[in-house]
Length: 142
Image (cartoon, helix red, strand yellow):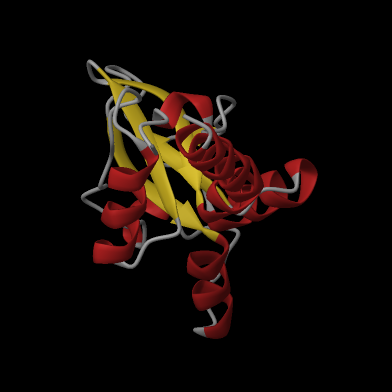
């Protein structure tokens, strides 16, 4: 019933940064693109090495950090929990719940291919409801 793969629900366009990026640069990225997170990747390999969220930036500001000079490598969340794009959304939701995370980078064969967020899942719920009701109606009509 909910074998919908993550790739059908995820956001494919993911903004990435390197570990050397400053908190200020990240804040500007968030504001310019109206996003709440960015994935940290190693420039040489493209390997996902961390994630930075709005909350991380706010914690830096609240702590009085010099956001113009503090680099994300000093406060990023790592290691990063990821999921394969072929996994189903039920599994992804369980992973997010189990780890208390709202953003789940999607990685296939070591390459970042998207990100699944709680917003993606919320937007998917009406579609899921329609699918469940349609399947239920088809079964009862047989």
